Image (cartoon, rainbow, N blue to C red):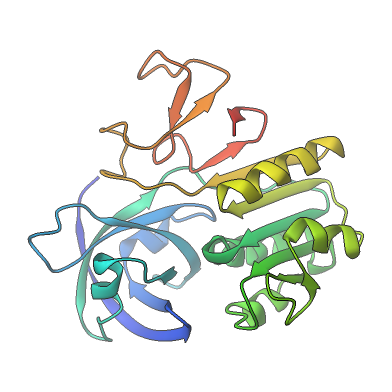
Length: 255
């Protein structure tokens, strides 16, 4: 996997500390929902890339939506249309899109990868069979309009300002959400609860794990999760989130 010097098409702030960047890149040619790209900032003191989930893919361009959480993403947020950016991607394994009624669940910055997934699933199984359950902190509902193009959207907010006051689990129970397959991305406590919720209902469950990464290509073993089977690479019961994931079948992993 080689670095590519790509071109930023646009960037805008779409909520507090949340930025949307469109990039013209070869990575868009093969990207699938659930994969990510490694973005490098123009700062020699920061050797490691920033792994960012792919939000949308369109005609040789891809969109990333990310939250500013440190000095690296702060630098990224300052880039503008026309600037160049180095990246590697697409990386990791994405979601396996199944037939059957789909429930997509995103929490916080786990919402962006649900957008391209909803788009492609709506084409595959029909918008009427896609429900997106999304959890926000407050009324800043980034990506809601995009998701509404491809799915029925159910909202939960921490402060109760929109939708169900509480978690995505609370919202699913309140709205009597059901389906055949669950696809989810978000913080670990949310994924842990969703795994139990889905398996109790005999739903297939695919989870995209969020984790701090170093190399992003599977060489350093910095991002691992515990699994039921031994990894052929390390010969212990774990898998590399960046290389073997970030998407896993819920039955494979222990949360």
